[in-house]
Image (cartoon, rainbow, N blue to C red; front, side):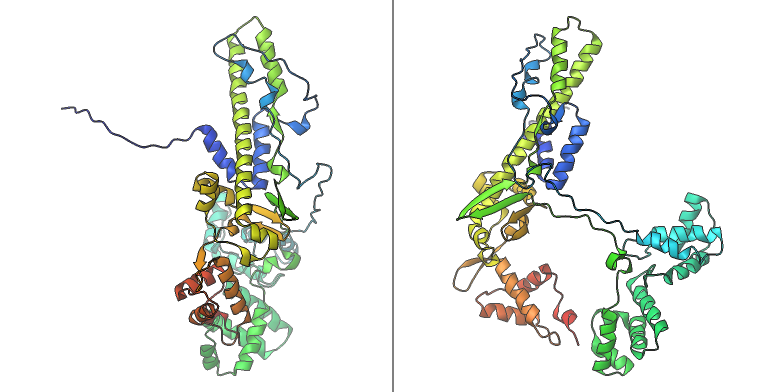
Amino acid sequence: MIKQQLNQKLLQKLSPQQIQFIKLLQLNTLSFEERVDEELLENPALENGKDDDFDQDEPEEIIHETNDELDLSDYVSDDDGGVQLSGDYYPSEEEKEFMPVVYFSSFRERLMEQISGLLSSPSDQLLADQIIGTLDDDGYLRRPLSSMKNDLLFTQNIQTTVDDLARILKIIHGLDPAGIGARDLKECILLQIERRQKSGNNPVYKLAFKIIDEMMDDFSKKHYSRIIKKFDISEAYLKEALDFIAKLNPKPAQSGSEGHVSKDYIIPDFIVKESYGKFDISLNSKNAPDLKISKTFSETLKSYEVSKERSSQQKDAVQYIKQKLDGAKWFIDSVKQRQNTLLLTINKIVDMQREFFLSGDEADLKPMILKDIADAIQMDISTISRVASSKYVETDFGIFLLKDFFTEGITTGSGLEVSNREVKKILKEAIDAESKSKPLTDEELKLILHEKGYPIARRTVAKYREQLNMPVARLRKEL
């Protein structure tokens, strides 16, 4: 028997416009600029106002479509077209200065040049090409030779053996820089030590080789007492070997100019400048593109209005234009909403962290979480999280990651609430000043913080130390 039931559900649905806004909001300046350029290419109804060569002040006649299917007045008005917001990071297109990129040949190209005269046959050359092309950017060969053998068979129909590949790899190990083609860190260091041993019979080189070859695990964990006992050596002799190992390069393909030219530049999303106690807050101008509806599309709609024919092809064309105009309007609205949200957020952050923006001292940072900003500007926490993600702010004291201004609070012994950034700063200073022969344990660091008025637990000290990317005391020890 069929029963009727009444269920109540709470669902949250986002419109396409809201989804588009959310995606734009989480982009940083560089990614947002690329997204705008992509939209300009995909949607012919959208134009960059800077490229417009007609008089924007000239009034344009608004056409009203009598057909109920389409109201053309929504699309041909210039009033809805523009998005422009002041930004002073790039004053003008002509004043942009681009950093020249110096050309460096890649380490793979240099390896191919070195090995070309060391191979005896074209088949060896193909194997060398495969191995060198498989090297990671740091110079390591992490793909097993057995897998490379299969790659050659299935992709190039070349039959070979693991032994042949190992023979070519051994030749590559003799190329510059030393350590290239290593399959792990241990092999990389051993290859470099072997190269040094060929240049001179130094007993320190021999000891270093034995340490890495026989006691790599103890070496990485800094169990120096075990190494001393194993080889029956003095602490001073061990220190010589450790100093030598420390000078070797764990990433041979990235030494000096051997690596690649980095093109990752920090482009601030916000600019905050202080003058006589007042703040001038603006967006990077790349966050404020001058977008508008295409005049060409408006003219096309005008032509359709005056035309007496209403063929199916014309209707299809108008529907296509309507779709593109809707997309352009939605995109422009999303950009406007993004700009407003960014400015609201950064203004409230500057207001709540005013002391820091005046002094530049991290000790002046106040405890602040995402909810504080969300409540202040009446937005959802997820929205503020997207704004803070991967965005930077330029200040009079340098460029900072926006999410760094959000910190937890800690209550001092006197009852004053301060940011955990201040505690981390004290923690880092204590570790930097410690004796490396006897590093401070987490318990000792906890006591130092207690003396300074920060009653936090040892596990909290361990958490902050890990956030500072500092290892435990045993791994910080030096001879």
